[in-house]
Image 1 (cartoon, helix red, strand yellow):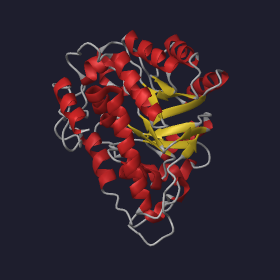
Image 2 (cartoon, one colour; image 1 turned 180 degrees about the vertical axis):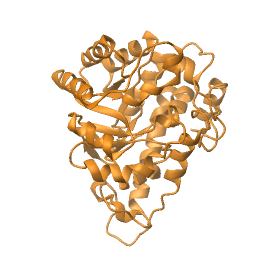
Image 3 (cartoon, helix red, strand yellow; image 1 turned 90 degrees about the vertical axis):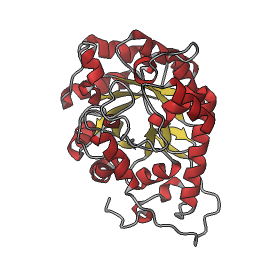
Image 4 (cartoon, one colour; image 1 turned 45 degrees about the vertical axis):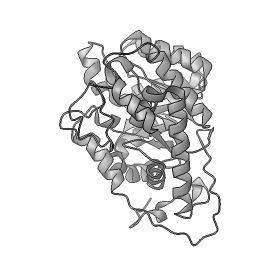
Length: 345
């Protein structure tokens, strides 16, 4: 991974510094790019909220080899992890994209690297047609979950139909993308949705034979709205701190959201996840599975499929070790009891 990170640092120059600690402090306001919007507080809050979670260590138990596998929305995963949807290599990750490292290569690296580890990668969406084109090509060859922006008008349903033809198990929509600076700059209309509009999208996705995920949930009230609209899963996320300054970190709001909708929808979460121990923390806080974003981009840009494969193999080893040293024999055993101080679900 050290070699892949060194290569990524060269290729991502001007977009990401590939810092030793990816906490959002060196890339404040760098949107487009890999930074956080404005003061960078939302990005940094993600990192600090997750870092503040402390674990109860124990080696006095019967667990010998933890079982990291789980099932979410009927999807079997070797661990409760997926690659987050990120699109736009050319303007978010690399100012000068070398041959063999464009959008299609990025999607291939993410999906194939996830597949090699028994998990799923998600694909992104954006204004330039090549982003959705690359997603469709990747999803034709590999299993994955496409995410579509909340476009106004016919474009939303046209794109849903296009990715649905690839027969994914689920289709997602990052509703919080309605605030993305990059989309406003490019002059393309995206919009917030009310519950009735969200229900219409969920119904359309279900008619295509797919589960529906809405990403960008940060309050129990919105989680309840998503459940009422017929969503199968939510992603607790502030979009990596890239759309609204001064939001709390995802780990801060996750327990209350989980308490509100557990059993009604599957609960996914992201936000500054860097290690397998971070995965364990978010699952203990209430997530059924965790999405990882920026580290996957660095691995894909720096090492292609091999980089992503190595990253998730490392994440799995860390996750297994963290389970072992908190006495968790399986994912169902990961409860608030392993968090120092605990919390009420």
